[in-house]
Figure 1: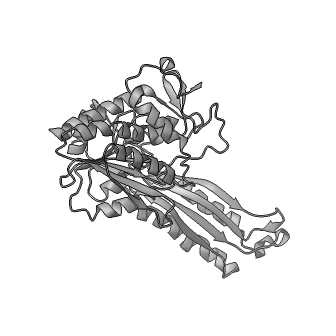
Figure 2: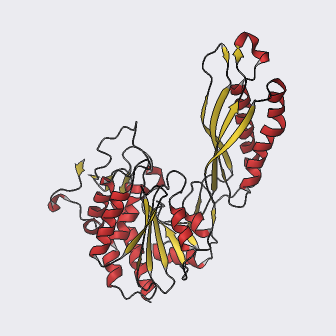
Figure 3: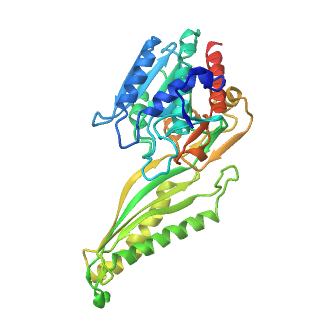
Length: 398
């Protein structure tokens, strides 16, 4: 594989190539893994927008280390359309890459690099379309919303959405550019994750009945969560989803120090992903009730200070946009497709919809490539996204 910055004669003749790939190359070069600041990338984007006469503003995180970016092209006093995407990427630690992950590299009809699919490809398309947006006679504006920390719970965009609630002109709709191969996604599940911390009572393992085994009580709770997921899978389902039922999952578990010590502490992190109409509070309430009403009385009968604590980690609301909603019908026309999908993974879309901005998910690339070593996007996907944006510009001129 060869770096993307090579003599023009050696480059493939994709229509998107001349506009999008140089921008994508720059975006991928910024290591915006969620643990890092994204301000260098934001500053570069600001400069790119300013070159075309587009003003932008930052919405910082509380520490001032990261920022969302908001820009409006066209008449700000009219309702328009948001193009939303996140700037952060997942780590490459421990992954076996065949090329440098933060160097965009060409491999035939694809380009490889961390974030190429999820989702700097979409951001690059938006920026590549800015000159056309500024030259158009837009009657409705196009807004760019570039956020941070999507990969750790969609935390960054919340500050931007808070500001949007106070704007006098509410956008007509939002397109979130997560990789869908330009298929319009109208719904995704909600998600919540929690940490369980179990405090037991330690003693020598030969005296095990006198202790409270934190690992064992945690294990019972983890099994309850698993069984709850199985019961939900026998209930409501929606065949339009890739995973048609609500699910639970425990992904991290820790506890104990030695086999001859009854452990006094154990912890786990679990999540549930629910169909949009399923009540998240009720699901968590069932888990909490089992801990409070069944497990803790047994524990406290031996050691009054024993107990179970739940810590909220993150959560995102579901998305459930109607297939006949104006935003859905417009997105299908812009994408040149008449098929719809629902997905199990979460996005920022539910947060925009939560403040009554009609929202769908549609963007270039395939989610199957996200978060993997040698993450890639097919360059023809960038062409299709640019065609979507060209049609959006024409729609805003009409």
